[in-house]
Length: 461
Image (tube, rainbow, N blue to C red; front, top):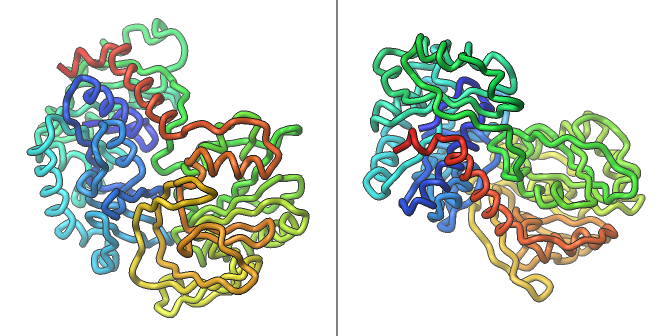
């Protein structure tokens, strides 16, 4: 089990590396995270919803992603509300409960999923959440030490040494644990290290003298193109002479990893836009999915970004709305059940009307487009009807086009080489799109090498 002293210590990255390492050793491996909080979700082959990180870890382990690997997924859709997904399905009853009242309902699901994986797989790689030192959350814990004690996991505690204070983080976290919990920790991991390891001196010995726990790996800062679990770290500004794309980052924006093929394409600059600014000069503007389309739309209007999108569209920029982004571009978002606070007018750029329904559609799709098969997935409450001005862009009510405006329900389109190539060609790009799935598989093998090169593999035996 990988735990971290802080959020963003690299738990997901390290767990992913371990999944591929053990798979390369010939073991049948399953990832597991009892509870994840993220709006970056994935859909399993049987139509269930899990965190994107556990989906990627399953791919790293070379096994089919499934809901048991992330039995509880929290998807924030307001400052004080998260939609609760249990075993892949939205659970409105648990979502309505106060935070501290959920444990008695969620822990049995977590425990059953964990033990079923332990029974069926040679190795389970477990990821914690946040930090086990959050003593205020101990009573409601279902994801950190409660899990470790339940299955007697060997715990490796990781610290982000790049942010400073790593030895204090490790010692302080260990000190906050109960004796039985301290006994589960088998090693410390210094993650995201830059520079000469000699600069660490005898700090690891100092730490072991106080805790009895060795530092088993110093993992170097490693650049990679794997998707983030829940944050979005990419930063950029438009570059003259390149294809420039604006990506609107409104509150509750979701599944942003699907734009990674654009972010990492040579000669393409994707600029995150969070605050009011002109979008003049951008070749394309993307409105991503949203966990709360109405609230995201209110933000866009309140910040004046609606005018910026309208001006960019009028100037001829290609406008792409994905799922919630597409719904925003339409004429109206009807909400008869009050899922997102009632009806709201859209931006009116696409001749589409969306009605929100209680039942969420979650499914993988393979469709024919321009003579090729493209793959993607749906996650949405909306049911959209097109007016006469919107022409079909994808079959089966999955996407429409109206001049230089495109709206699609299918997430993951740009991860298809053929669609990514077409999209960038529309912007005057001179390049060749890559097979993104094959690229990620190579990245997984590369980061798995860190387990061996750092000497961590020996401590795992």
